[in-house]
Image 1 (spheres, rainbow, N blue to C red):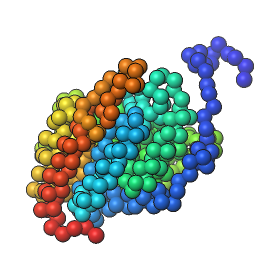
Image 2: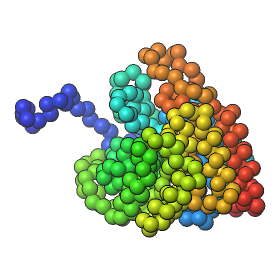
Image 3: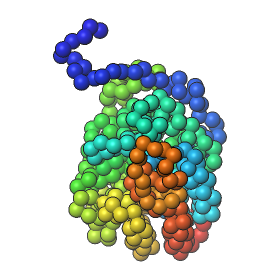
Image 4: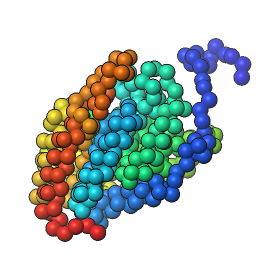
Length: 357
């Protein structure tokens, strides 16, 4: 194509991207991992339908930047999950894409070397490799899908997906969610409004036709049948938390009025912790107590958790990074995570009485 002063004025360069089919050939989905993914989806769907009374917890690092630490976390989570799977369903948060309010590191997928080299082909390989290894451990995984072409590379390896507060209102992401093969949680908007998430649920339940890519990386028209497992995730907003009983009741009324399922999750971080990771436990205990008191619409929560608490800045010196500490949002550490999950398990045991089989 000939250069034109009317086109690509601000594009510096383009680089070829590996096709989904070639990446899958290079890093295939093994039968063992596929079975884990499908079983995770089955169990999460049962919770969302109300057929499984266990409490669903999406827990893990704010973002993945160190695969070794992520696998360390997965091994710990697997052991904990095996101990409490009768009353609590644990899913590891494995986020490779990070939406930014302005600019910043956008995740392992986009900049896997953490040095602004943006080797996205390598990021896709490392993301798929990590999901394979976590699946081999037997841990269910969840992630946020930000770029609408990424699911063609990774969606077959995750059991749960999120659409974030900044993208829930986006038609592009609602269309994408309508074609995803796993349950999708829609966050309320950054202003705290649940209406945009409910609108997204309604939209994603419907069929859509839109521009996308196929398994060969070719642009195409994608036609979807709709995703019946969209659900609301309350994450607070600029005006403060929305996990209290009054806010939950308002969200339930909105869901009922909109004729969509009333089951919801609560993100204990972000606006619900006033961006203070040490307050996540307060939100968790509040919603568990609401569940114990009889509000079965609260089916789960999200926690930002890592091996060690807090956060650290990327400073160009990777050797100086502390092991198991987030480079994005601050997280609670593993010791607190373990303590909170055991407390939640004890509370849910009192509610459920008998183990789930």
